[in-house]
Image (cartoon, rainbow, N blue to C red; front, side):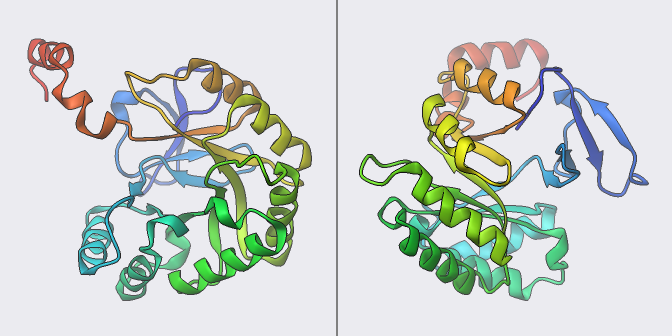
Length: 239
């Protein structure tokens, strides 16, 4: 993820005496955090859990991810794995304050009352008091964006979510969300990889200081099978 116009990002490395520095992308590590304009820190790399399923496998994956250094876990109501993620979190010795949890409300719960209830249910399944970042999973034509954003605003006031964001929004939809949000739109989580760059959206978010979160960054493995990328990697002696 990267916001701002500078090709370097302002980052803070865990365990490095708290210094803030400019970094190039080849310096990024699992400990790297972006520092947003409001001082909030978020780990750059997050563990996506789509299609991990509601099973012991999900629990084991999240447990292992936490052991090797992941601190940002991304889930959603639609993924049907929040309970397993919550179980893994409850068993770790890592302080809740060190974790960054993202979840999303599904498209059938975007009306005001439904969204409020869905968020409370996600919090219950995760076994936490609040969610760090709560996203509208995708816009739908039959529910006004402002109605969903009003619910998100109230959840922030209630202390149930710390930050609000969206996913799969086009520029005009993101503008509508920004117009009605009482707190800044934290991110737009979009499909973004080498073969699906979405330059217009990225440039808009950079101008508005909105973080772009990329899902499917390796094109679900497709990028790794690209002969062009394999040739480039071979020339540089990397994978």
